[in-house]
Length: 486
Image (cartoon, rainbow, N blue to C red; front, top):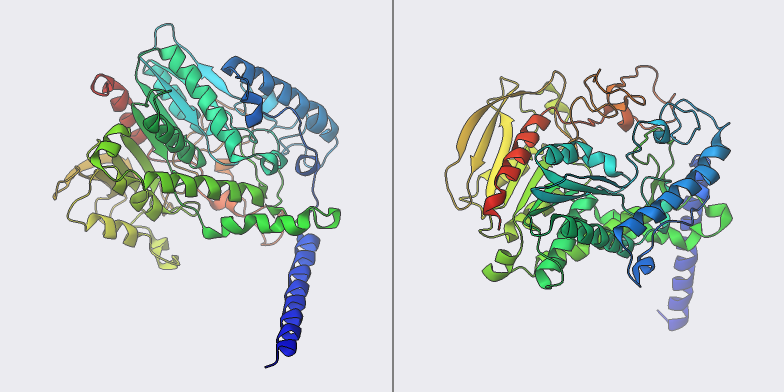
């Protein structure tokens, strides 16, 4: 083939590919629901990493946050007064799910203090979430005598658009500001880092910084819920939509989903940019964890207690194992896995059986960390037992538990792990002692398919953990062991 023909073929192929991409973009643009104020109107008062260039205290971070929420009310909530679905819309002035009308707006950073705390804990929520997601953990630790700081990460708790404007460095700097404040409050007391999902990656990122330098004390223990150590590779391609979505007529391409914002503490719409940011963060954290090769490195890194659902559609469970825990040698770390319901009749409908993940792990001769699994006593019963094998051991210890699967439940989920079963928003059990907003976890709509303009995941995905009492027990035990951390 002559060079002229080759060039011509290359140009034709490029033009064809461009037309296909354009056609797909047009289809997405036409089929994606209309954008609302919270998808289109930016908020200017959000914290940025450069705001801390000359030093920014925790008190100043909170002052900036107060201005941000005043701006949210002015630009989004008040103009949304006559918007559709005022009952459900979190931005409706008098809506039932407007968090500003709740006794506490858990979208904002908070602090649970004590006159003489026995330790401190920094809690870091997940992507699209808010500080509410670790509220139950905060209350447990506070009752155990810990001073608790719940951080709202930049881009969260306000509007989905805010996540399209956030950067990983914004999160990292905000975490550091909150941690410096916590350390100053508890003085020489033990410190916990607690992270959920994307917040788990940020907790590990901070701990790696502390282990590598001497400007901040190393945390004494890390607690992780469904940590984002590895996510789907598709997230790495999310920024490709930027090639077109800067143009007004392609402004919907930056959104992986556009849905009604009915959840008071978590965005329903998902900007593609957010997935890319998590990809950048998790890739960096995995790379840095891979450098913990020798026993000296592992010794400087704090012990990690992770709680993971074996069935997780958001993060890669395998990455939590080989990217994190397999690198933590002899430092009192533990991986707790909530197995699927092995007695569930729904298993015949599984696309793949996640139980193979656990079989692969438990069939090892040993692991360099304690491996614990909460699983059915046998497939004929819904009652659970704790299967736990210490680091380096070859035989597990099996302990019966007073826990059982509720009828119809076949697994936990990524979003269920840190929430109580009677959580007022996400719980599947009623909570007469605390009622605010509409309980999303107890909604069970039935009707014709295709009629609703909201994803079925909002109703079918498990949003709270029937086995949270086990987590509470483990957290209490952890706080009682503070004397052995130092």
